[in-house]
Image (cartoon, rainbow, N blue to C red; front, side, top):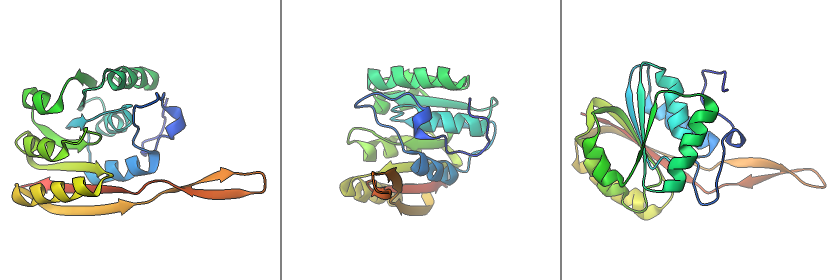
Length: 196
């Protein structure tokens, strides 16, 4: 369905559900670029929500790679499966359950994306460290200041280097009766780092 190599599948191409989050298109593009993906890699998408990161990552790592998408919300799991089918992707495994329990069961990853985690992002980062290969990348999307602070603290304590913090605020156009206006979305902070 998505016939391009570049990331940035428009949000409206994904099936959506109320109360199941999606990483918005422009933020997703930045997260994918920070991951430095290549064919054949193993990728986790923790807090997969609608599956948008999983799908974009799966396209980047090609059929020789594998995405393990984890979420504790049954609605998110069903929506991710629906989007996988819609885009005709075959290299994503969807895992229902608490990430803090499921991560330990997974094979080692080249890249770990951490998104909507229900307030336990710091603990998930700590657990993820031992599951990330040396030289592997972690990419974390954050909207709360408190989460940002706790994640930065834990990354500095653990075996991570090249810690990068990027905050983005996207504005999208909307037609009105008199013209076009720009509407700002909430800022998102993206932290990326490499495991030593």
